[in-house]
Image 1 (tube, rainbow, N blue to C red):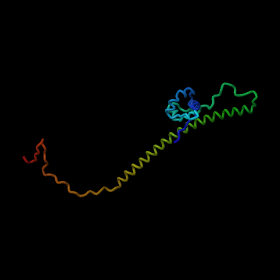
Image 2: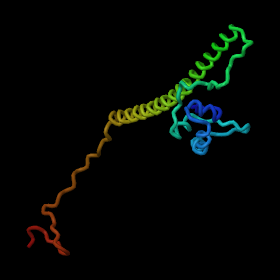
Image 3: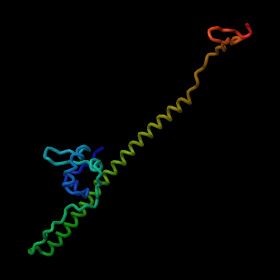
Image 4: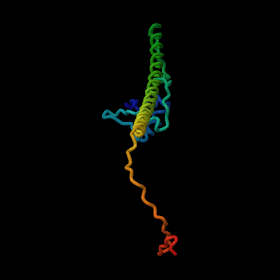
Length: 169
């Protein structure tokens, strides 16, 4: 099964609703749970590592924070402004859907693991049932007819080191 990974610590911070400095402080723990830095210096963090440090992915986190500086210029046409507003809206929606997708993939992987485990348990139970049924169907082995050992007429009684037979003084 593949482990869903998030690329970049900034993306982890955004999806989890924490600051980048908080993520940087937890890099050691993230690494313990499987986060890796590639040769280009980019972090790849599995969802299980995020859960391991106690964070949850918030599916509705916006992709980009809107800066305080104005986005529009005075020379932009009204159509450009409208398209830019639609673009920003679509970016936010895309970011929301990406977050939901990551969370849904992680949940799907969890349920697939549970289903695989239950399927293995079911296979084990079927094997046990076949073995029990096979044991019940086999005929009992025939026992040789040996006469029962003859019992002594009078059993021996032990007292300490001496054996005394009943009826013999």
